[in-house]
Image 1 (cartoon, rainbow, N blue to C red):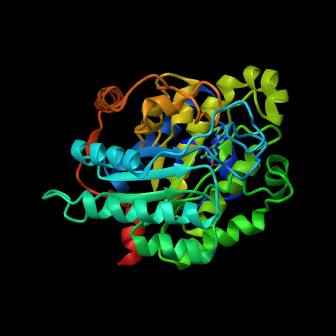
Image 2: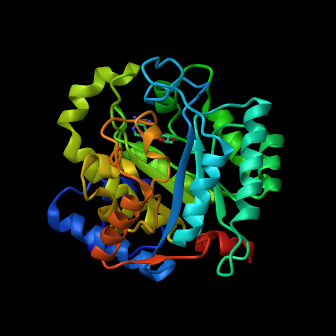
Image 3: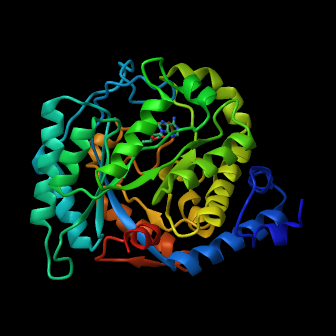
Length: 365
Ligand code: 5AD
């Protein structure tokens, strides 16, 4: 293996090199990795942090993923579905703050009523958030899971232009371990393909620190991102939720907290080194593990953040994992807090623009 300082300056990486980089734990080594990733982030996508206001509009879900707090079988949460007006209020607020984009995320449903709700929300947001500074209205990312090709085409036609569908793990073994037999890695890949074909900028991602996951598995995940030629990455640490079958891992995960947190940061950094011009989110799950997690994610090469716009009263029922921060805060508090966090690590907020990834723009050109 080459010295670390040379490895981080490479253009091409082998699976072994990626796994080696991901495994760095010693402080000085981690700093070499972090700094290289931050510099590449500045060089390839700049020092702006783009906001995507996150509206979690429903926790009703037909899936039963073993790790997720809003899985179908969890009868201990109150299910909700925001009204279109509530979604629009969030969208207007988002636009007034100058946040250029919005993410509509929910549990998975595939019925016509659901599809029409999303379509209508997308149409209205695009039409009603046009301003002098953003004549095309807010950019819209959807995160509503596996759908048919036709449904993706309808969402795209309505005006959404980015879609986030995490693969959770590109390892067939881990994917099977995380999901009931009704879900398959093949179908998830098919959906990602359809998203590309229907004209979306495509994002994916994985959970980090899943029981049984190796550094090589994570290296494969990064190589998978590259092979898929994705535009955006959203990934974060796996965190146990007590009302799930994976609650049995609670003690094991608690003992690995520090290691998993660092691994999640390393994943951001190494993904930046390998993929370079994509958008990478500093996700909320990082902050669930450590109060400064999201801004630390930025210093490891992330360039996107997703401020919570979900009305406060519903946040407690949208806990995919435990310890989700900001449950009692409102939008204005989240805005001030994030502003301080971002400027605190020397970055600026990119306002009034969609903030598409350089990768997407380069591909379109
Ligand atoms: N820990 C961390 N991330 C989780 N997600 C769902 N449940 C958990 C958990 N327990 C993530 C998944 C999903 C995204 C919306 O939230 O990766 O794709």
